[in-house]
Amino acid sequence: MRRLKVAHVITRLDLGGAQRNTLYTWTHLDPRRFQALLICGRGGLLDEEACAAAAVSGGPRLLWLPALVREVSPARDLLALLGLWNLFLAERPDVVHTHSSKAGVLGRLAARLAGVPVLVHTCHGFGFHEGQRAPLKSAAVSLERFCGGLSDALIFVSRANQETAKELGLGDPRRYRLIRSGVELSGLPAKLEARSRRKMELGLGRHKLVVASVGNLKPQKNPEDFLSMAERVAEACPEAEFLFVGDGPLRARLEARLLAKGLSGRVVLAGWRRDVAELLTLCDVFVLTSLWEGLPRALVEAMKSGLPPVCYAVDGVRDVVQDGVNGLLAPPRDAAKLSEGVLRLLGNEALRRRLGEAAAASIGPEFDIGEMVKAQERLYEELTAARPKTDA
Image (cartoon, rainbow, N blue to C red; front, top):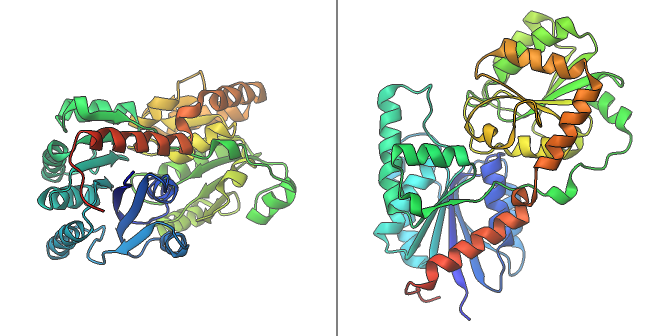
């Protein structure tokens, strides 16, 4: 049986959930049934990992497209569109699967121009949000609406995003698919020895209660509200310390704020780490201050690790956190309410345990990364079954 050639397109391999899951799918498609190709721009923290996977004999193929950049740049975007079009004409994939907003627009346009038989797009979260200026948001929605009409399937990682797409007329709802952004459930909670030593290496007290978050230090993740929460909670709970794993453009501003508030000794900005699952086992409460989300991978990992979450009640978060059942929710941008939830958990060990156990139990097989890949494989085969296939 001829293998289907599947080309994944993503803007850049930054250290985020969408990028990690795209890499995982690219490297784990069944090689007996699929030829896997990844096309992306350079400059991401996961570039080296992708190169290593592509260097394995018989492994998936990797093609760099330097013109594909995150920033809006008409000249480079046109070059990226032409580059993708030429690649699709040369490679003749059976399926093009796009990820992220920029690659989603350019990749779908180029794929249709090149006559690719099947076009799939995963919405890991929208490129528009409430905080944008109206003209910019309107343009982004219009682009998504047009490209949604080009798509044979639109994958959503959360029901909330799916409902938003339906309300805005982004593609045909009959072509919607819900496939969760998966994590490796079998490794959670992570096994960790020398717990006290690991806490001290991070600059945390051995016997302190730790409130953690994971994400990019950028406006979407809203880390400044994490610091607002830390200021309130630190004053009311001397036993609390705070850990934020991640990095990004807001780091310098956050460090200056910590110095000004005298919190440098109680808040650790750990930067990017590859041992997040282990770090979660050192913590007692997980906080997410994102202002919009697809399905936050870090939240799923934290919940499966048994951490009770306190989060802003935004789109994808509401898919997994039920207030008072397996976590606590606060209105977006309400740092005072968020802090109340954190203090409530820190002051009540029985409640922390009950909500943490419920959080872990609520993360079922649909969130497993292996199941995510299998669901995508089934979708590719379903969509190509009734269509003429390109030659390998």
